[in-house]
Image 1 (cartoon, rainbow, N blue to C red):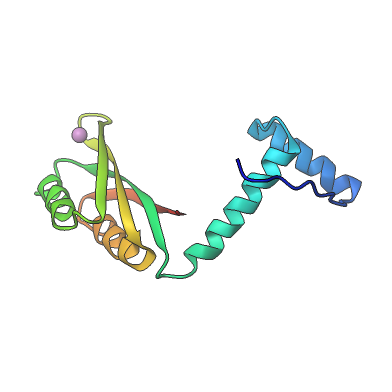
Image 2 (cartoon, rainbow, N blue to C red; image 1 turned 120 degrees about the horizontal axis):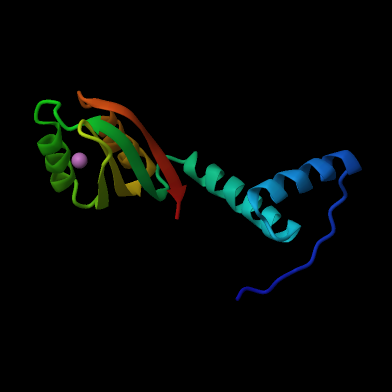
Length: 134
Ligand code: NI
């Protein structure tokens, strides 16, 4: 485990009460854990602003599997981007709709390009690219 340094933070009471309420609702056991996650989140966001950064992303999409050739196109796209598409999960939601999570790895700009191609396919109803800097 990395060396830990203790720090003190000054916050006005009202802001601290709001923060405590927020982290209690989110299920945090301690302020330290919540603050560590906030710092990591901000550092990750800053790294993702650089499109050359290596990252992973979960592309989540809901689509109608009756849409013409969409399933084949999605599989074909993943096979042609093997370096990027490292895993996928498929859930049959009902008789029409499927939910798919496709995990991509690569540079932020490459991930966004592949992600946008997936989400813009005809038959995709909902979706988003969730990037995480690694
Ligand atoms: Ni399905």
